[in-house]
Image 1 (cartoon, helix red, strand yellow):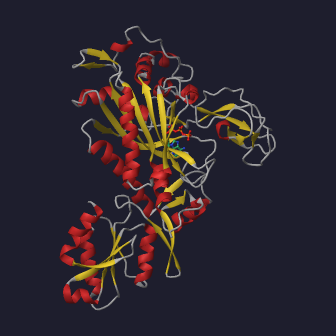
Image 2 (spheres, protein in one colour):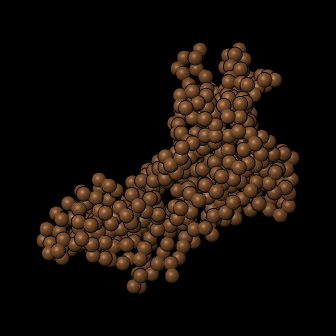
Image 3 (tube, helix red, strand yellow):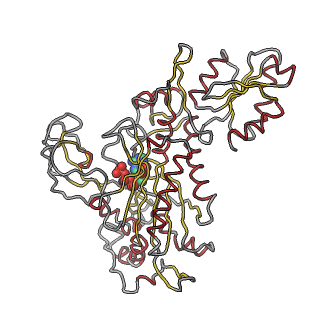
Length: 488
Ligand code: ATP
């Protein structure tokens, strides 16, 4: 019987040993909460992003893609609310001076909140029953204070044109800022969505848990624009679509669930939000967010209409984004520059937005955790990553049984043929059994071995990662068979 992952440490060590994920700046002692993807990891994460892109952009008529700059006009973040509100409420333990997010504190009494609400919590939360996760002391916290999450930097070399800009804390706002451009440059009509994959940065208070929560991470976000009144239907649609995506890529149903947000947890503008949660083997309670699907109403586009009209004020303030306040919304806001004229409904409106927002790194971690298995095979331990073939970093391992009798040449020829179709790995070192184990640990679904019989009848063995069964296949049929099995 296969064992699944019991602790994150096992996975962290496999990831390092096999080149999936390394600590950033490892040779300098590491940089907290920053990670690098190694040779296998970069393939895995790219496959996750490609599978997402294929499902939400390539396979749909109502979606287009976008790739925005990480640095944007600072007023973008004023309009979105991030400059004023994107902060976590933190409390410091008076004993050990560790700061912890108030919504992450556990204990017996006091208000229970579970997720980010970005500075919108009460600052008078009762922490008397809460326990410091660092030293275990109960109820010895300072008053909660907001901790800003956006990274700031300086742009421009000269004093007169230099200004404070932000590393984006989400990719979403780049989509809103390009809503008009996309509408004007394509013939797409509401309902439609814009999808983007890219880096985001948050100066998180607490990180830990490997790549689950880091300060630099990648998001896969969709803003889906629809007619007000149809938003609830579209929200249901995206809920189902996004859950199905994880299931189709092999995550076990029992490890996934929806968690609807309680009304006091919702951002003031959001009409509804549900998280897709995965049962991770760590953390405060195992269930943790993979992706949020929110009904953001017309809030963001309306805010950007205000922001666009406030740019003069921003110049007048000496380009001080914090000090600039947004102008009031005019009465005819629904006819503003970010409105849409609906030919069919014969009306102009600001579309409502459904936002499925996923983390590429967090998703990658879930795929790794779910794929991990430990088995006993003939008295020996076997580690295997049972990735869905679409996600596997290497699709096919190609080996000569031994390094003689023309086997390496034959195997190389097969390898060169197959690598034009999928990522392959050629290996002729050590005993073939060990080579299989190494591919099992990398999650490679199939291995092809050239042996003595190959020269006689032009067949090879095809070994299946999960069943470990080997079948003889004619070389002429190999490519077709693999394409069918791998569905690519
Ligand atoms: P949390 O409350 O856990 O901090 P959030 O609800 O603020 O997260 P969102 O702003 O909804 O998260 O971000 C959307 C998605 O982006 C998340 O579901 C997650 O997959 C990913 N994400 C957010 N922050 C991080 C991070 N620090 N590291 C890795 N992924 C992240």
